[in-house]
Length: 536
Image 1: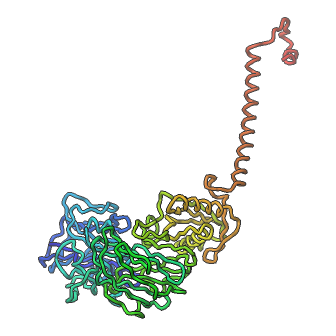
Image 2 (image 1 turned 135 degrees about the vertical axis):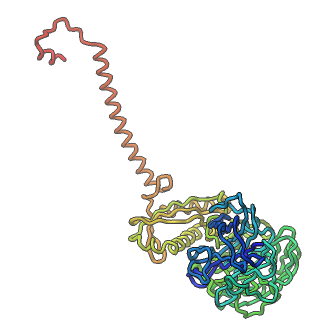
Image 3 (image 1 turned 120 degrees about the vertical axis):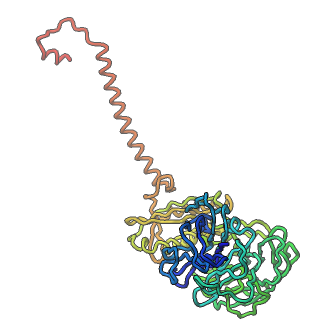
């Protein structure tokens, strides 16, 4: 049978020019690939972004077939441009069909499926729909880039079974050669994720931590570890016990509070980080000693947060994005796992109200507020050249302004489909701000009206912008004076047009009356044209 044998979607550095997918025929001889298709899926929308018809090709004499970057060595049979194979969360699927034609942008399907690998090189990303259709009931594979200082790949090591994720492990790359598998069998950690982190004010930083997973999943062998971003080292570790409940949630509460299963773990000895970032992480190991440097080895899930908007994760960057939270707020708040919608796929958490044991409170498109903004800038060249960076900075400025105005608890996941263009001296911005409920939506609308009406300039990465309501469509411009001026202009125009129409009507009536009722002359000198003209 024909199998996916090795996948190398991510290369060290930014070149991405040695990516490849290796197929293997277990008969270890030349094999005709007529009717086989290789489909690459995007994990964000679960649609095909590349489709390769393998008909007309065959494996080599040892059963190997290589698809890869055009500049790699050994040379692949099917050559791809550099950076074609996406890093994940994505999938590679092998199909066989003489009737079905697979096409770019098609939705993921199991029709004709022979083998599949669903993978990610970014631990924070998921591809739930791809897993559900291609490898149901299994876990996504993580290409751990800390495995080696050189390039690595996902290699088939543990079985020749198709559509079995546990058959693969991270190894050094071996294109068109026998996979370099370790003698020990890879252990797949349970599918447990951090669902919610409740942050409290005062000396105790956490009011509860909520994990989610498949009901009945044992937490034995896992540890909950707390890291300081300043040095990137563990400051405390707690071995986990128990099982995920029927709701799919497991809660760790503080002293005086209990989880739904009676669990009562204390965090009183864990001090909040006074500066930089902090993180909580779940590891598939019993205990990590204090002072241990943060690592991706045996990592199951992690969440990084910071009180400082401009602070990156530092030593904790590989855990994923760092979420800014208003730590000076007197009320408790949570970072809750939410779907990213149309925001950046790496964003997984949003600021929310605490919901222990309940469905997370997340921003929803049902409470969306449209953004249509215009700003004046002296120069568009920088905005065009550094579009992505300035867009992210502008998003942070907008969120900061919103939070300062309403203190309603918003974060990056609330901004959806934010984009901008710059033409001449005008920066146009559009997108949406989602809200959790109608009250928050009203607060966002109030902020937006005030923001548009404000004449004060503000700075984005040192570049001064000033709001310009004049270039916004009237329906989007809340300025009373602007609307009033527009209304007066229409009033004048209507008055002029009405006056002209009235004059035309009066003249028409006059001619009509004269033609219908001519004067009754008894004596007309037909030869005296001057008199006739005068009488007329």
